[in-house]
Length: 430
Ligand code: 4AD
Ligand code: MG
Image 1 (tube, rainbow, N blue to C red):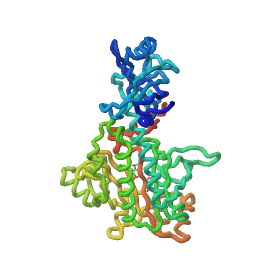
Image 2 (cartoon, helix red, strand yellow):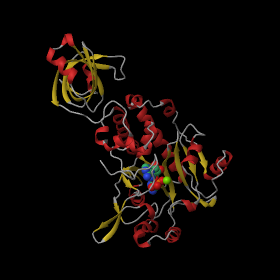
Image 3 (cartoon, rainbow, N blue to C red):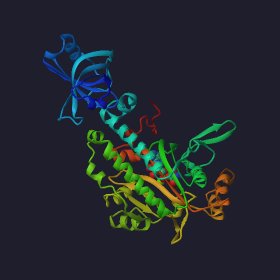
Image 4 (tube, rainbow, N blue to C red):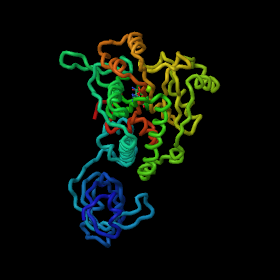
């Protein structure tokens, strides 16, 4: 019977064949322990000299790291491993022998590993992070599909810039100039006027010269947009969504979280409602905490966000930032017109902002005024203004950065390990 490591649990005490690779091994004169991997998981194969042919035992002892194999044997219970079972190997067929695999069990530097990202993906930790990423993607579709959202795909080649013009990748579009999308939001607003509640999930690009543990040049963003939702309604969707993805990972990725040695007690605390603190109160708090460098009207840096996050066990919303440090489209706060109806969601444990969201201006005259103030080319926003001309309604939305969410939930230090092939300031290879 041909099966996989993951499915092998259904074949206890039966003989199966699994196609995989040799991850690692150790052996003595009488027994060899093969650490096998097949994409679905990692499993130990035990080869006992007395129970296999002499050829098979020699082969087991001599197999090289990352050689591809078919292994055949009986699946038996193994209570010591996270997996719960192992294979008593009977025979091995080598498919392709690998020589001098570059990533050995010893420690390698990050640059070396990043240069070998195409191979590094095979390692146990990296495999676990990608599985968690996949679970977050699955749970994202589940959440929005279950809550009446329609998935709409905004374009990647665009003529307009939602989040400021300084961080755009330029390209030629025949005789015109075009940019790679830094956010699908403006198109999602149009989609919300057609479908009510919509979400997008796609790649976005920021030509940011930031070299931090939180910044990628290319990242994936989930952008829901909701007609007839005010900003408070949107915050409720955000906290429910984030809680759903955390709970899904806790439920469906127990082996992966263990592999990553993630402190799951911290994740288990994530439940609605999340705390909210206004920007004004956050500035006061930071001053009390001894941050003399922050003045009202300035944006928070990573240390400020971390100080605020450390005050809470849960992700925290920082609401109502000053108008002048936020994009042109945000609805003024009726209680203080120097601020807008927006929030950043800051993850615990120093992972920083994972969501940015706001209520959008729905008044045509105010939107025109903002486009002028921000010196944007009104013509390329003409479609966006139409949304305010033909049946404008209050609406809100947000964007969650997938890689930052994966970094936080997996507990990996740097977002570069949460993207299969990360694009970084100095890295376009592999
Ligand atoms: O806060 P941002 O820039 O918001 C927007 O783009 C809005 N248009 C979203 C919306 O309302 N539809 O980005 C949203 C999120 C951030 O909170 C962060 O998680 C992630 O995208 N993000 C990045 N992730 C990795 N690398 C970068 N350079 C990122 N820039 C933003
Ligand atoms: Mg932001």
